[in-house]
Amino acid sequence: MTEAATPLWEVFIRARNGLSHKHAGSIHAADAELALQAARDVYTRRGEGQSVWVVRSSDIVASDPVDKDMMFEPAESKIYRHPTFYEIPEDVGNM
Image (cartoon, rainbow, N blue to C red; front, side, top):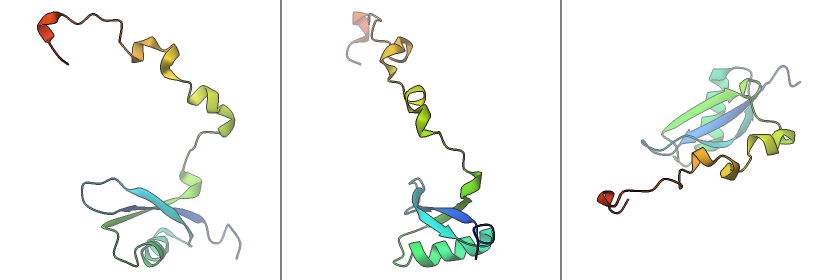
């Protein structure tokens, strides 16, 4: 089999209602339905999931590690993100 015949899918599982889905791993499958079945078989064998999402890996847009500095520049140079220069009126009390 080639990569084109069995695309890669990323698997996300929600353990309980109210929690967010977390990445559990990857799986190869021909289509979305088979990917869901395979993800259920591989990643929820012990009943750890309430919900399973599969997303074709080629549909995920990710940042390039080369752009790390630009993407994740520390916020210290962006003072508007930390409005510590405001004086809080005494009437406000503890915040």
